[in-house]
Amino acid sequence: MKELLRHGSFVRFWLARLAGNTGTQMLMLAIGWHMYELTGSAWDLGLVGLFQFAPAFATTLFAGHVADRHHRARIVAICQAVQACAAIFLASASSTNAASREMLLGMSAVLGAIRPFQMSAQQALVPTLVPAALLSRAMAFSSSGMQATVIGGPALGGLLFTAGLNTVYFSCAALFCVGALTCLAVRYEHVPPRREPVSAQTLLAGARYIGANRLLLGAVSLDLFAVLLGGATALLPIFAKEILHVGPQGLGLLRAAPAVGALLVGVSLARHPLGSGVGTKLLVSVAVYGACMVAFGLSTSFVFSLLVLAVSGGADMVSVVIRQTLMQLETPDHMRGRVAAVNTLFIGASNQLGEFESGVTAAIVGPVGSVVAGGVGTILVALAWARLFKPLARRESLA
Image 1 (cartoon, rainbow, N blue to C red):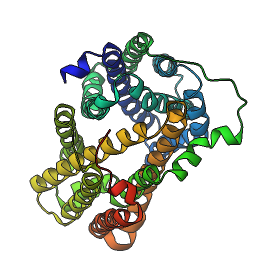
Image 2 (image 1 turned 60 degrees about the vertical axis):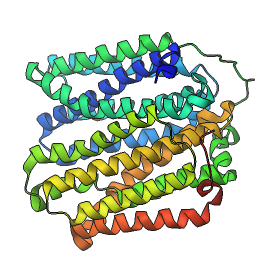
Image 3 (image 1 turned 180 degrees about the vertical axis):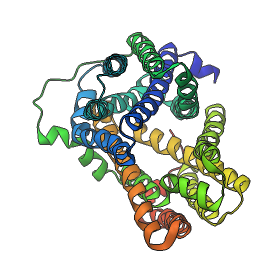
Image 4 (image 1 turned 135 degrees about the horizontal axis):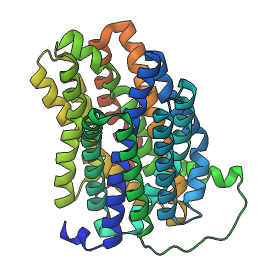
């Protein structure tokens, strides 16, 4: 850990991401609450997510191109500044009673459109801030910080709601400003590439690079299918109410449990790198994740359900650290933004489609059958990928 903390730009970037992601978690909570107060419609709550996903899908490839052409820390700073402006605008609209359903959906679309620019630049920036030997620790440390914001951001937002909706919006704006200013203090060696026109060839270069690299293709597609099949997040309200009988308070704990497990494992990985046999460890971690989903689906004990969800979060953290580190090590710097953009697109698609798949399967075979079948499918994917993507399965080290 001490070696990481010696790299000042990495520490500043980590703090900027911590502030920004906390602000994002709070802002999404506030917009959802604001929408429900205005309309009382669950359908409109669903539209908030859709209006974020659709523009993100449209801008992802261009975002990767931008991340490979411009100073990545400044891109992140600009994105956080735009989010600060959005939070201030929402606070102003709320205080003057000018907020409407359409305005909230429009702001959701704006936030969704800029997110790929921020995510692509963030993923591509980390390898330029630390030596390659420390990259896996840096990834684990970064992921741990993000999991902490997933837990703490909504909790802080909930506390601030007692002082009013505008307090949450202005607090988000303050966090985004802190993140943007801290990002501007990040220094790394940036050599502007030669200028070339934006074309289908340049936009799709990341997808072609992944397609030609069996190791990267295996890593990205493994995440896609594991999340697509094994996700249970969308069905947690059903389990909390109908199966475990723990109500909304228990639902909050169920949602937090994977993040707690991921945070603990991430901190451990930041101190103690994975060492050898990382390909095998990646596939085993995905299989463990699937087994946890099977156990959760069959469980009728709230405590046991919390435990297996926490273990699933820890297993997922191992997978995330290995995949993200391999992606950065196997990609030349001038391509990292576009490769990160494709990865971001896969992650977004797997999360959204995974929730849809869970809902459709649950409608056919019930929530228990849906989660158990998804967990079994995830285990089978891990076994299949061990044979289909030998360069990934046989990878020995994160170096």
